[in-house]
Length: 139
Figure (cartoon, rainbow, N blue to C red):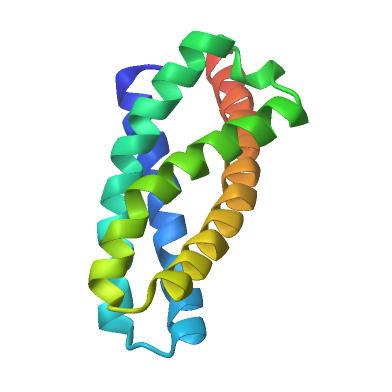
């Protein structure tokens, strides 16, 4: 992936995730949409930076042929990314939500599970769509 495509990939991932996460967070936490949108935007900015760095490192280790990646590698990709996000997002969530450690941990783990599944699905769909788009533009 080119530098520009990595930026596009990260932005698309985050915009869709931001909408979904804000809606889910408002329902689950009973906080107002403005507070949860602010938190979601902060977490989104952290995630975009981490996504960019993590995917470069992951591609260096496992190769850049993303289309040949099987389910098990995609699960590992999602798991390691989300574990990193847990480390980076936890302090921010504690600060913004002003909740106890256990509650924030459970919310963060819930978000991690959501994003694990979302990341696997998003990246798989993105990779398939990308191959089709590139093949169509070659002709």
